Image (tube, rainbow, N blue to C red; front, top):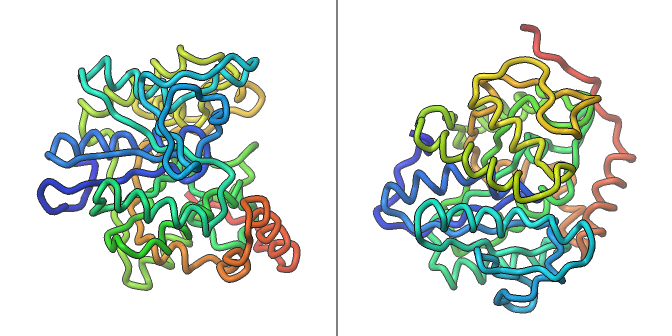
Length: 321
């Protein structure tokens, strides 16, 4: 079982990518399993795609673009070839014979994304919300040695936490061991944050995509399809790392051309899914109050940067095994 939770029958589920083009895709094994159980699943993505160039999709409140397999993007150079949400929907339709959709947004503040999530809860009658992070930087509180890229993750996590009409919400991290360039991010400190949540008595559950060979194969198939649909420079390191883990690779691996000079460490840990209480992850952030008042996504990034500069960071910890 990939999702170690019992959901009420015939629930409506929202799976949101934390921040980054492929984070929503990292949540696809969750969605595919829950659909097998009889639940309805929709996806949302804090997208890096050129949404302003999408010409054939519906919008929600002028902020959210609804992407499916029919969505098209006008040619605006190389970046018009980057569209993982559309290519995932293409793969889904070709594989299962029915459509799925991804609600896409970008550059939104915490306040605006809170409104977006509340609207999606209402439109789709959502019962459960999984905020999925491809990597582990979303769990950091703000004084770790290296925070990765925290701002968009923080926006998604805090906004989902502030959207009150759904009570069953989880932060999910995956691709453990692959966060950060040149292995600067301390995964020992990520485990420390998980330990903090465990100590608080809040939910901490772990499973692996390898628990279901059928879904593992589906993830690999979808990743290969999306990768072939886009130029090599756009291939996802996080997605590729999970795929390599599912193939049984171990140790430093070149998963795409971006990692030739900085291979990624792959292990069975890479395909784990960690389910953590969303409220605990959000409230653990030391800069929580500072970012709430930011009126833009850039304002959140600046607030986080200012907080980091004002505090001494911990030394880098390593796992002693």
